[in-house]
Image (spheres, helix red, strand yellow):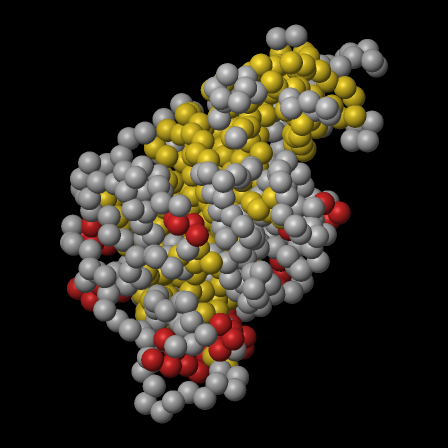
Length: 523
């Protein structure tokens, strides 16, 4: 995998762009307009089934990068110029349909140069939504005469009905390659999802297919979900997607897709996320920064049917970290931001303690495979350097053999591990006056009714895999400050050791009562 696969992903705020914004865009993304789009029945797409037929037809044709170019004025816009272009709120799509979902578009320019095409589906007809300069306020930008009109918009955002919070608010954004994000009624933008990951690992150049065309199901007042269809197109893959999204304290999405491979790929990542982890409570050495921690997510969470509930704290080092968790039957996975204490971040602008966690609950198509975590080194917070995804064990062998999947995507505060004791912090360092490594892991007390004496403490199990290392000490004590448990263990790590996989969990005899804490140590 190329180190630069995420180094080219820029973070950009949709509503108020700033240098520390949190949007993500691939500069190396593949083409945004479908190959031979004019020859395909785009206006005949009325539902997910007809979109599947379109994607299957497109997969039989060779991929062609588009030659379309923006007008030089829009092509040459810089950050400050592009941010002046604002969508006129009173022009929102579906403004005339009462208290229902509204759509607003983003203007091409600056780094968002590839137009995307949109359609309205009213149940009877499918109508293109043509680009209209009248929808935008260009502020003091002086548009030249004979300006070439873009062929489409750069992306879109969806505003929730007034009834959800007593006001309209933006809750979902699609912009750049196949990336999209959402907020909840309590948490802001942070982590990004995308349609699919192609060759993120495996040695071949990574591809960034695009959502090139979108179809909006015309909303009605009182409807809970807003439905979007999307066509995916890239050098090696096409796909049909349907998103049913509903905002709330947990913003809920049902995602279903069918993919067709134009040619074999090394790896396919389903339900992929991109996030940022610069440093946290477990990071050594820390950057010279006034903030104690800087991250969008602080751990990977995995739940396995008839298996453990795993929490993997995120960390970065000089070298790429790759972790693969083989799973026969997945209950769910996601990236979480468990630390909600402002004192641990001290950032009044980025508000990292209010970033959403994201959880994938499989509905179908998630048979045998693995959860993959990629952690890249970074020197600042503007780069998304964390990727998590589901990698199926079996891939289609031809364009006529589709792969289909469906999952619930929850943007939320956190995914609780049932009644198990939950990991709430991970700290590490050297033992005083020694070079042994010490790990300190705080767990909640959990919800299991153990009926134990007041002075009882759990047992702790520590397992070390990889290069040689020796566990010197392990113990648990009650943490009066949190009301939970604190587990300790020390490691004697020889100078020749470079990589360790660590596991720690608490037990009541043979019964596991906590999440399985897993960590990768690298020299």
